Image (cartoon, rainbow, N blue to C red; front, side, top):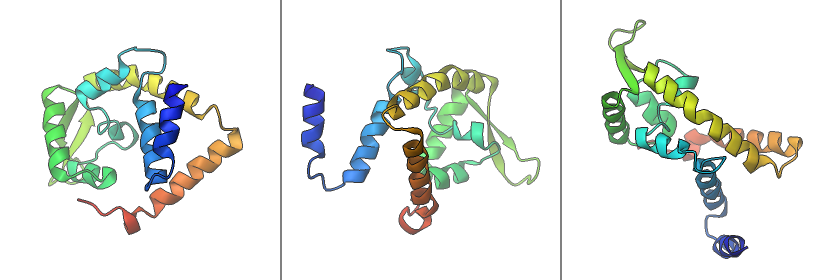
Length: 157
């Protein structure tokens, strides 16, 4: 109850009502779904938020990840070095264009992803339980519309 009252006070008349609510949901989503199962701690420890992109779109290079995430190139370069050092990703010459170096999840990275994704799927399910199926589809559609217009508002670093 105190959490709800505090959050309501923070959200009331907030100058960035949508962005703040999106960030609140992001923070809740990052918490482990079934208690403290360590998934988020593990994800944070290996900085899996960026390499997860590689599960959906293999063969990205660091510059493409920077563009997609809106993160500064230096931030991505640092993350790539750290993830390579931890053995989560590998960097190889692209077979299509030998001038490019593309990133791949290593076996260890794939295992880490498999271990943590279940808790995030469950957490999203819990987060969206308050919405009926039509509302969930509408939410996805609206976020898709915002993302599709990102060239107009999300200037890269």
